[in-house]
Amino acid sequence: MSTNQASAGHLLQLIRSGTATTRGELQRATGLSRSTVGARLDQLFGAGWLRDTVGASTGGRPSARIEFDPEHRAVIAVDLETRHARAAVLDLAGTVLAEHSGPVLVADGPDSVLDTLARWFPDLLDAAGVAPEKVLGIGLSVPGPVDWEAGRVVQPPIMPGWDAYPLRERLQEAYATHVGPSAEPGPVPVLVDNDANLMAYAEQRAAHPDCSAFVLIKASTGIGAGVVVDGEVYRGIDGGAGDIGHIRLHDAPDALCMCGSYGCLAAVASGRALAAELSALGVETTSGSDVRAHLTAGQPDAVRLAREAGRRVGEVLVTVVTLLNPGVLMLAGDLAGTPFMTGVRELLYLRAMPRTTANLQVVTAHLGESAALVGAAAMVVEYLYAPDPADARLAALAS
Image 1 (cartoon, rainbow, N blue to C red):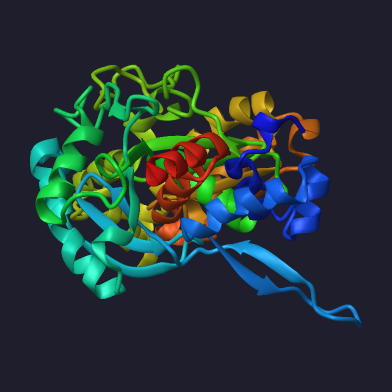
Image 2 (cartoon, one colour):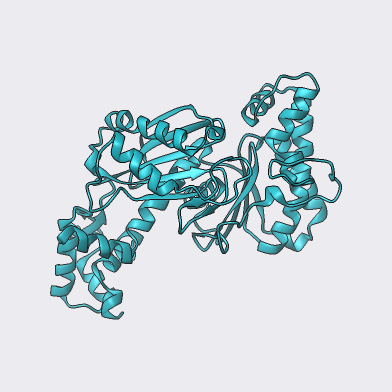
């Protein structure tokens, strides 16, 4: 390994992955001298990122090992939906320390929503027992396509007024107003991604870590997909990957979608679409969460419509599964119960070639409503402790 590939940040990566957890293993993995490894570990210990531990004994003296300390900092994660939001403080291992949820209307626009969220943060930190200076960063999950590099939503059909809005900078300002300045140089880091992406990232890591091609379908107010390949979220060129809710169906030309087009999958099979159909049948329903409540209660029309919606989604997933050949297809969101899954399976196994589905698991969510929060927190941790950002942060802390 070359010197620039064995910086303190790269040593941290080896430790966090479990590849090398002793000084001797780090020397062998990097080819660095004992003194150089020691100096770089001193940087990491000095920053408070590592702790010593004792490995399991194999009959002799237990070995001294090094591990990442998930308690030295904390992350704020926010899962923003169309009508409510959930926020949590998590440690760096993804354990939720405190959580709060409340009504928030995404249609009120980003200024109002982001300020409301930031006002929750001080009480959340108090409830978690986390001092503001311990906050590593903020991860924000939103129900729309995201340009990940820029941290901005791009043409979101169900988020009016949010297109190209400077989310990262505005949330940083709101955080500074309601909580205070960041403990590290510069404003508190804020990372933003699509909710289905973050749910897929969290679920794959938690329940299917060995699956190299993983797809999650979120069917709630809208319909979206998150794709994880070799442990990394696949976002496409500008964050548009997985936006399957706006694939056009050939036989729904009169179905008007929130995006302004006709015939989109979301216009006939989303929670919003089912809520409208149920209301037309005299079943009071205003949102995808209301549909979920009806499904939980076994309301016959809701069950029938959810199964039909699953068949519609399954129609599109035939192409998705054929193209990506995933090992796991996970259904999540308000609609993802037995009727919806039954509909998906009916179409998927009827239309897809047997070779395509031979090794496919079709499952429901493992983490439930926590998935987006856990994924948002993991996004922040994995980004800020990756080798290059970690080295930059160490240099800033030393200056």
